[in-house]
Image (cartoon, rainbow over the protein chains, first blue to last red):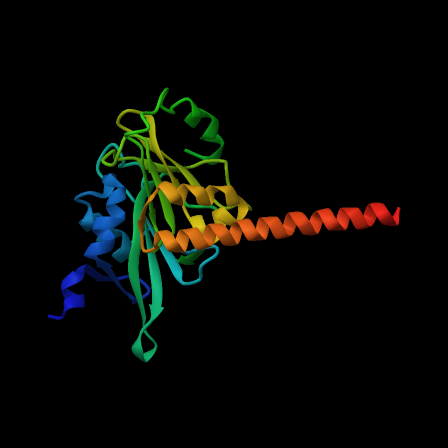
Length: 117
Length: 135
């Protein structure tokens, strides 16, 4: 296992067939600026693997956002979990994503373009 | 909670802030500025507020649903979009904990913004003078 692989704490595949990873440094140093996400790695994985919708960022074509309802514990169970992923072209025409932030929010952000379903 | 609920968020703001408890943090990777009114550790949901730029949701109130209190502010696309519309906000980075960007980077950015503001102001002033002279 290489150094980079050791730093990956989540690897999953989204409904578009792309691989998404989460590095421990981004989880520890930024995502957990949102304490509602503490202990919710499984919810993040679910939001990526089985989102309610996937949208493209309004200004950044290289960013994709995943929204999933009813995955966070109370009192955030009526909020959406939003996971923002930065995209990079991989080898052989594949796309790899990296989680850059995640948080609870009551609604989809204005201006985002639905990509899936 | 929709965007028109922003006025109600004002009622949920803390009555006073202890400046020693406030934590400001900026992450360049996500381009997000976080202001924690009561230090880190308060779970919250990020509610878009009406202070948007060109119809974008960039500013979010962090609402603690357990106490129904706003415990912080989240600004997305801080350097890439928000500061271009609100240049004075670059100063927040001088007191923020930084990740993925250095103090020198921030200083250069602030100098660049100041130079651009000065250039725009001077150009506007000279143009006005020319228009007045032409009258």
